Image 1 (cartoon, protein in one colour):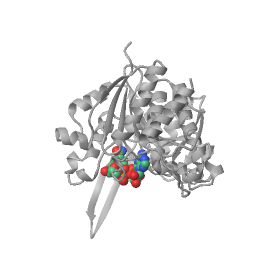
Image 2 (cartoon, rainbow, N blue to C red; image 1 turned 180 degrees about the vertical axis):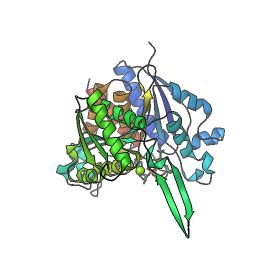
Image 3 (cartoon, rainbow, N blue to C red; image 1 turned 120 degrees about the horizontal axis):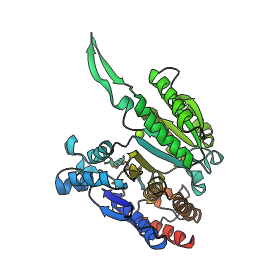
Image 4 (spheres, protein in one colour; image 1 turned 135 degrees about the vertical axis):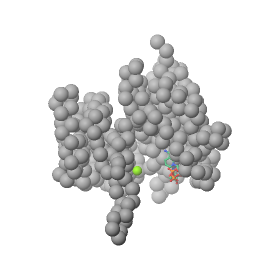
Length: 368
Ligand code: NAI
Ligand code: MG
């Protein structure tokens, strides 16, 4: 059998800087854990535009469709702000998501003990927090028709349509149930079935799939507005949350900030299973290209390294190795290593992007 394949798309700004550290981690798994990956690399975003006049070359798109996982850094930067919308760096990212049909967006909110002071919430509310929000990413109100701004009599009316088919709900629900099985076997589904028909259908379909396919998973339902309150009041009551595109956008951003820095947040976007049983998948940090610190060795590589940990768990059936990597990051932080974004008001001396990567590798070595 051939090795699992990874396509690395570093992109722009700090993307290549943080991806250098992920490459060290991938190499470590090859050398020390006998987990060899076929790694290829290509351009995306502004970097691809500079070379090809398009933010995603067709050859790169074709390669992304074939590999087991895409790892993306970040795209964009002020240099490209003047470009026409059709060739903006973000369009490269959107094309990947669309053509790979990545309907299930995984956004973990994980609070490392050493950083619990960073949260805007009390330390005891967030310390040890580890939850996962699964957001439906390819349908719902951001895509539904009719949409637009129309004239109605003497005034304008703005219209967006929340629309979900049964199969769209079913596939993201299955993805969330599968995740719950890999974690603590609990899933909370959020909608507004009290005021929206699409919410009623959402609740019905999730309930049906639970009964037919995942009766072993503990399922609960919550109205999304109450969910927002509960996420801030007592976030540790949750494990996996599944919700639609709009509610997921808002709830995942709120949950992310429970944990502090943007430089710490990974994500995954999953699609349908491929022939080998693995889902189509793209892993990327939540942050952007951070032009304000690009090229200075200041970027925190942890978000991107945690994205690779998600790839280990969700694409490469290596949950224990993912846990090893996450534990190494927790240890490095507990030992006091901080990139500039992780320094609190009391200050301290930051380490560089490369030093953070090296520190993680050193702890990985010590874990053997
Ligand atoms: P940003 O996430 O790039 O930066 C926001 C702030 O967080 C900046 O002060 C930055 O220095 C800091 N930051 C972000 N990641 C960090 C890290 N790993 N370590 C330390 N500090 C970090 O968002 P912004 O400034 O709104 O956008 C900058 C560019 O990135 C724009 O061109 C935007 O379109 C693009 N962008 C791309 C995304 C992607 O590729 N998925 C997502 C968000 C923005
Ligand atoms: Mg958002």
